Image 1 (cartoon, protein in one colour):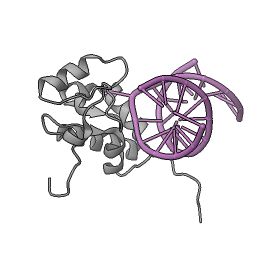
Image 2 (image 1 turned 90 degrees about the horizontal axis):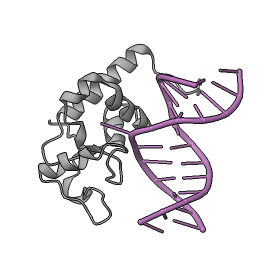
Image 3 (image 1 turned 45 degrees about the vertical axis):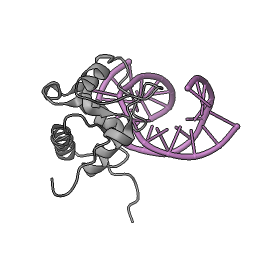
Amino acid sequence: MHDFPDRMTPEQARQFRDDVLNIVSQIPCGQVTTYGIIAAWAGWPSHSRMVGRTLRYSPEAVSLPCHRVVNAEGRTAPGWSRQRTLLEEEGVTFRANGHVDMQQHLWQPEPQQ
DNA sequence: AAATTGACGGTTA
DNA sequence: GTAACCGCCAATT
């Protein structure tokens, strides 16, 4: 069968962006989730980099709790030191290595929500 | 058209 | 803990 990778059509790209922003808007205060989890939940696993791109360049993202998105290791976004402050202000704890304590604060979307 | 660039994920040393 | 890779994929050079 056709096994070449399918590119995102403009329609799919729009849907992806909307889904990403919608998921981010649902992250509870005091919790975090990852780029990979968001990508998979939006139906495009392996597109974690696109999630980061979406949050970085979508104007709507500034009004969303995008500071609650970290990478899989709990690392905060490069060049955005304020992210840690914002998280600490809502009770997110960090480990000695400077990463978010994922055991304590990782949030994953659930079907019922 | 080919190479590079990221708000990434994962493995290996 | 660090660093070096590899895979990933749309956007940019």
